Length: 365
Image (tube, rainbow, N blue to C red):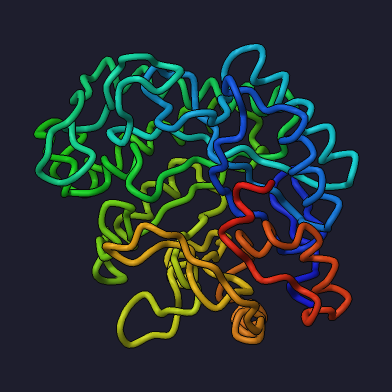
């Protein structure tokens, strides 16, 4: 456990260990404001020893950003005041915390608050390949969304967050620009891979120019999409490098590489997972994630609507990869839902006392 429990520093942030709490949407902020229950939820994980908490997705201040009820915002006086209480509670326990900045894009349907009857915004009006269901963004729309991310990051730093994460994964807005299936634009934001990453690069560079130089920017991306688990942005290491290089140059400090199962190799001919390849190609620190400490991923298989439970699994493979410097940090999701003190139990070699994850836990928090 030595490497997992060793400190990690980047910019103005020093973590006591390499364990992060993965962002997990909860829809438990009535009126889009983090309440006392949210404060306690994150406080418990900080008290349990998590090095860095990455919050559930918190929507930026754009009219089409939210796509689910009771998701917190990171815009406006009340939501920011709510997050300040969360930050203070986490810091009081010696923890660090970063918000995940989120815009759902074309996933949104009219009627979700805030936003009212505003349709989903996406590069070509699509949330799913070939099906126009919303608003195709204009250049003015793009500029507005870029500014909403920049403002969210500025506000996050101002109220005391230790870093920020940009959500560029899982088929939401930024990923809809990356993905050829949902980006059919013919302007400078569509077509080539260079063009499809331009929107995200503008967000990253805009944030980098408006926060402190040593304030860490984390960027989360994935190959898979909620719309298609088999979708891939890059079929080869060379294509992945072409995708990552402009994002890295724009100002990303840490890449959060979302996979469903961390132990799976990303490309034929190598055992490296997505985080391993990303670190090799960019030289930047990376976060691995995906069923850590559990024997099954969270997502249902196609045609099955029920999320899955997970039994406790060995950490040996994960620790060997971390010791080999394949990646730098480890994000734990459902195991931290089941065990707020997961880090303490691991640290004290009490793995047999870890509680398995049950999907019923998501509504009991």
